[in-house]
Length: 459
Image (cartoon, rainbow, N blue to C red; front, top):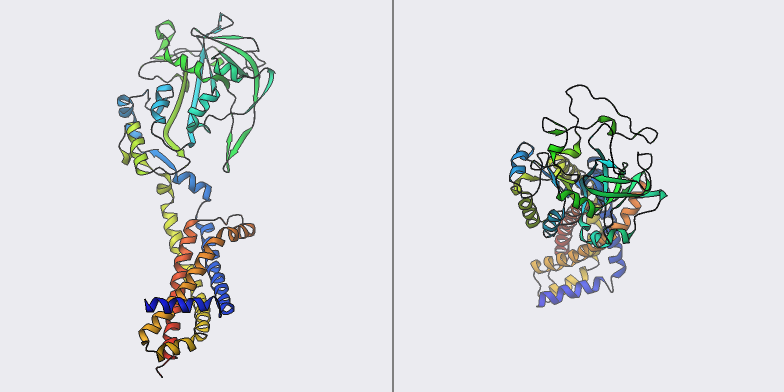
């Protein structure tokens, strides 16, 4: 207790009677800290990708089972093709949402819709037309399926007719928007193998949108209520009613691309040629008028998964957890090692100069306490106790400087960022800087503590 009282007394003196000297020491230590922090930040900008890229890769998981996908598809509880695409329907959503995973910032979602009649008339020269679509959700559905909110994002302008309303979606009306210039107009009705869909407006997609520094571009798509697509996915097409070759649906390639002058141009296919598109992928031997596919071979979450979440996710996909890899580890571990080594090296070199500064300022403030130390020696304090008193009191000042520096790191980084756009705040830089700073400062305290013992001999 006596030792604690003595140390508390010395520390109190540092921040009362000797406050001006302590302030000088604190300022010098803080400047030394940010000298080292600047060095680590500079090294990071030279050896690492942007923090946004690192965030995406550290939160990313990819399935390292390319050669095993066929086997996984056969044993999956869900409709899964050998390319790793899952059929996205209510059953998939319900089971996925129970995992309580973070929201996704990237998951590849593709939707397709086939229609065999236009305004109750069969299409000339082909069994069906297939178009890219984007599912629209009602407010209640948006809240439920929020984990995939970004992947299902789509912005557009209505240039003819009207937009699809919340009432349309909540009342499950089969209405849709079509891109301008396609071979449909406002008021047309599409027959999707028995499922009727009315075009109520024409749209023009916006160029794209930016999210956390990444840019996402738009492709022209039909906008269709999610509920309608799910209905279409419940009833497979009778393949026998269509022309087939080698198990694939055959349709005229003239319908694949955007029509010319709002008219489809029929192209006579070469003999014995089968045409198929990505949307026609079979799911367990079945083909549907509509499909919503999500590829979970590579998915990026808003947060890094915990071990439990990773295990639950692996079980959901039907794979072992060791098959889920991190792109960050695969692509950047060498970069991280190189950064750590270089940052420690340069920080240590810079720290050598900071040691001289720290030794001088710590010796300076120790000299201000020599009278106090002599008094303690007169009353029986040993050389060891004087050493401990001085070392602990100096460490308290260093700790305070470290706390102040850490709190100031973000504002100071804003200044660094203005100097160079590549300078970004990184926890790793702060940790390396703090480690070197503490090591340097403690080394500076030891000779100061020894000096205090020598200069306060027993009377």
